[in-house]
Image 1: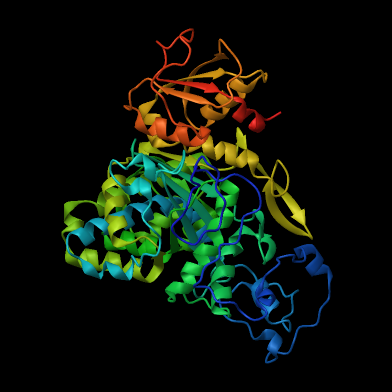
Image 2: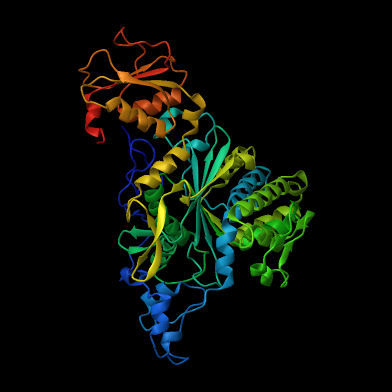
Length: 545
């Protein structure tokens, strides 16, 4: 069966199901990324001393004008130390408040960015050609973006979704300017008009082939800097940005087990500018929001929001959505959904979309602070899908909230990290959770009844395969032993006469067979099934013990 092929440079070896199984990711080879002499010298291994170790070690600081203090502004210190060994690796630089701001802000604005980028597709269809500034393209069109897509274009369960990797950075002028301290997968089901946001821990310890082990938030900057051969906070070079995408995508794919179709890189000034451009967002505040830890951002006023209907500008919308210290993550989630819905509704009102001044301001904000490999035509199609998805149909997922706790904290050389509970670099549990949470929309919509029969003498084969199918969203209604054994090849019987074409296609791919319309044994009851799957000896080799 034809394996999943991504139109961009090949970098993973996906399984036959459209999801990517575990193992160490393969480096994406892109002809656009030239070799850099001594490239390994710019790899931040991130095995830094703990703060306690640093404080206990007396190290004389270099003179003010010495090379040791010649750091580039806003660049990851670990990376600079790797490039310039004269740097003092024990020098502690206080993390700016903005890095904390951008980490808590990103979950709030992630879906908003997808929505507003999709709105940009609508604007382009109305003739606003200046959107080329934002939608530079670079990624091939995802099959799931097509209406009534031909099943042959879908390479397995999961490819019926649109997966967008959202990356949040501080940008020029901030410490670790290109560290993606917030990473989120926005997965859209265009068939059933739902979406999901899945957070990826920024401290997840991963292996980046040819670069070593490090936190996953360094994967983007490694690709970008390796392409350029130098450190810079500037993101105007589109090829360098693509190189960054090509670096981070296979790592995230290897962790989550799903292909990445598109990328969006965000400087968080875009959120404030977008809110201000549409004239603010109107929020009905249910309870007073008091948070002294955020007072410094609110003119030193710990009362961030009073009860009642009010309009927030970009600054106060950020504050309202980010606060959590005096409430809870649950309460913060409610506020985030309020802001997202309010911004979506405001941006998509006729008054905004028909106002050239607001459109120009919105695109200016995006043009300076958002980079994406979506093309204009893909953004237009994405708009037609996302506009019908309400906030109630957007699920919020992560990997460390009960009962779905698949990661834990650890320590490597004194540095706090996040690692899978199954073991370092073992993403099997994570991938199983993601697979069951992001089921293929075509399978869900057809909801075909599948009966699984064991046509061999191998015990437990039908149950094992049925459990696997259920994880992908199949409606398995019965498992049993076939009236006779000795089937060498798996038989798939389609009793829908081609009506459930997507389920048929996926099952044919998965079991490497071609469906027939007649049951091979009259002793097999077929009245309560849409598909009958009779497992043969060709499936016993994959039986998991």
